[in-house]
Amino acid sequence: MTMENIFLICFGVGLSMSVLAMFAGTGHLHLGHFHFGHVHTGKAAGTHGLGSAFNGFTIPAFLCWFGGTGYLMLRSGIWSMPLIVLFAVVSGTAGASLVYALLFKVLMPSERVLSREDTEMTGVVARVSDQIRTGGTGEILFSQMGARKSAAARSEDGLPIPRDAEVVVLRYERGIAYVRAWDVAHPYDDVLQPPARTALHD
Image 1 (cartoon, helix red, strand yellow):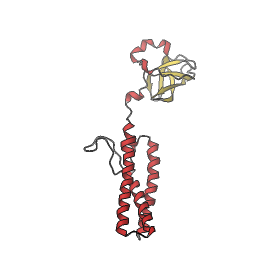
Image 2 (cartoon, rainbow, N blue to C red):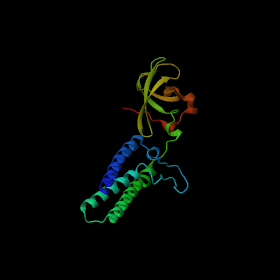
Image 3 (cartoon, rainbow, N blue to C red):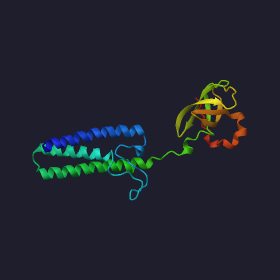
Image 4 (tube, helix red, strand yellow):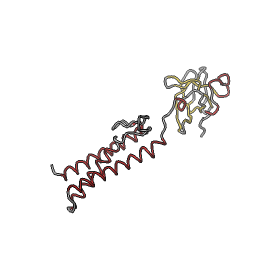
């Protein structure tokens, strides 16, 4: 196998892995939870919470830049093989370092792991978007972590609740929010959180 083929293979593999890593990473949304290449963001000795330098993002970047640089220099015909390999390695390292800095120095510090309190449903104030009939199930709309969300809901006391009524979630079990109209929920003040009044209104 010639060096030209080796460079081309490295470039192709690196480019393919980069595309896969990009789609897999965005699909998980949180880069710290991206398992391709074993990226870990927990605090380990000497890492201070940063991911490993060898992961599913930096390795493809190295291969892509290494292969591309080596192939172009080889095709020019004016460089000796030792210099081509040297510059290809330097280029690959620079590319991987750039990707590492972008991901783990710029993007990941702004990420945070959601706590249980961030997604706690008890005490959330919502608006009924689909009427809750007697003993039946309706739907509520609410805002949580800056996002508009919906959930199946039932009346805590079994009474009907009309559409557009403001309700408070008293408990949340098996994907169902058990609610009561806000104006009659004061006996449950111990489970309510006034700052959580996040009902959505059209």
